[in-house]
Length: 296
Image 1 (tube, one colour):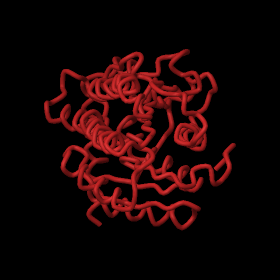
Image 2: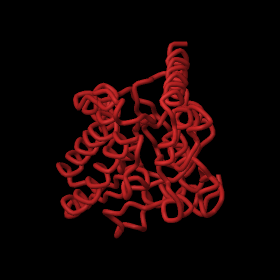
Image 3: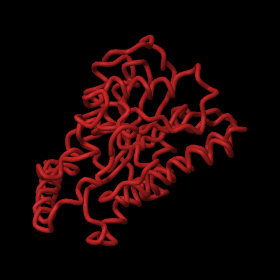
């Protein structure tokens, strides 16, 4: 990866990345480990976590450890952090666990809303609260970074549960930066623009007609997608020593997308009911494929 940092800039850091087995979480984990950190990754798919941990550990100066955890369950989070603290306290937490899909809100079911809200808002808040309480009790300083979206400033049609939940974490970042600042705990967030990843991208682009706004590089002033090393470098900066006066901030990393063009899914307003039906079937097929891969 292209990096402006020393290869050992995160040596001695112990960081938990929720949802670190796939997507952006995997890439963030890779960046941390390449710079000497011990990284714990959690999620419900233990086989995926083990595969990611083994692959990154063999090619990095740092170490990656996978721990199964259901972020929707506070008891599961506590059991995970008990295991981590047995080897020493964390120095950082990345709230990366996410879930999302495009849909007309009028067609959204309570179950669909719950699936996103319980992971994005509840799960990441529970993790923040668990880790924060431990740091406060033992007088340990720490850094928490939440991986958000630019919709926290604008909202977004057709991904309303995700926009709501991510905005809640944006509010949490500002609120706890003030409340927990006296304990030496910093909270920041990043708001990436389009950084394509396998799986998530399929849910946001299920049919050609649905490829608009938030996922299109032509609408970005820099006329390209984000490159993973750019996101990695920002996350490393926020986790490394030397920027301890930065807290309560949500930092956009989107090539100026949200400033110059709709970085949302508003353009999907033109889709017909038939097109939405095809999009739904495509997403179902993608989910079935993902489930089959998990059981292999």
